[in-house]
Length: 87
Image (cartoon, rainbow, N blue to C red; front, side):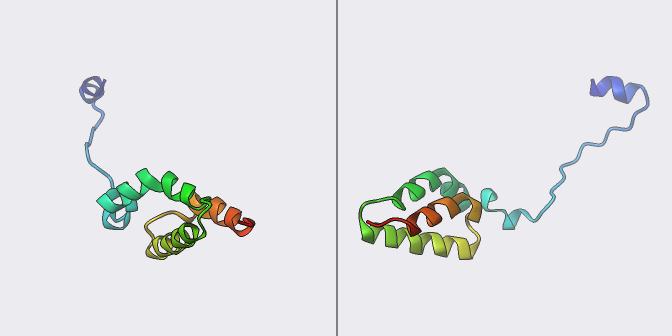
């Protein structure tokens, strides 16, 4: 199809367009990729019956949020749920 378009006089330019700085994108780093792969495990630990594990997860998620390593929308439900947890 591209050859037909080029043959009809349409100018075709191939280029990669980056909309933001790739160094700031958490998915473009190895650490960001690993965090995204294991985010469901981290969220499950928020609902653990162990209070010390829940506390450690809140600290870890808080640090990751401050660093911008994870999206707040991915963990907000678990953080709200833990506020109502009476364990």
